[in-house]
Image 1 (cartoon, rainbow, N blue to C red):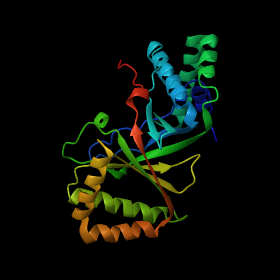
Image 2: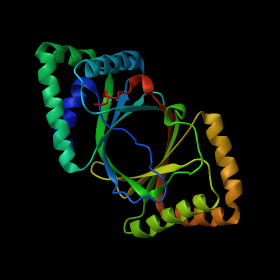
Image 3: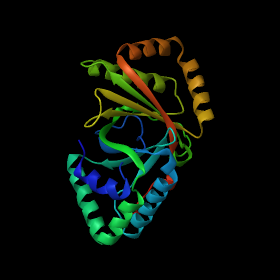
Image 4: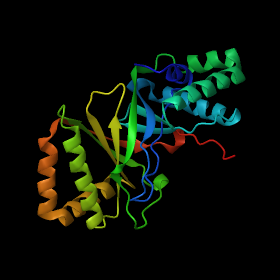
Length: 260
């Protein structure tokens, strides 16, 4: 199911949603809603596609588009665009902003934007996710800023139907284990919604580089010891399948509106 706002934005700009920073552990917050689009680009058209996105960023800045955009490149030609909205009403607000943006740039510029992306995609799909603060972990100790953690490692966990509550208790146990060991790196948990094969939970982790990530993972599981091994068994027992997606955050293709 494709939202009208994405149909408008993506055809011209291939825009969608961003992964925010997790606030301090222990703060009670409502889950945030995200529209996420995956654009699968033809390998031979990657350069043209990225130039198309850069052109969109320039126009966003020129016409002061009010919503931010974060972009991730996974496996070389899968581009994930993320866009946060507060709730389902926020999707309508995004649609309104997109419509106003199109009016500002005019039909001729809009047609040029569409033309600049012609033939670049194999396909695209749009999905919704919720960020759960309760099921995420953010360390109290300082760590590199998000712009320095461009390597990303996403684990897609497809849970057995009807086992969601049990699985969320396991995730809470992981959070407590991370806290008890004072682990210096965190993770964010996203719960799949419309457009996803559910039940789905995505564990998003990041690091300065692939080498730094795998090194910190080895050190972390040594700290967990037998407790971590037991918890891992409980995790796998509740899954019907899982997928790993590895790539990089792309600040050069991302956009931040000027603060008012």
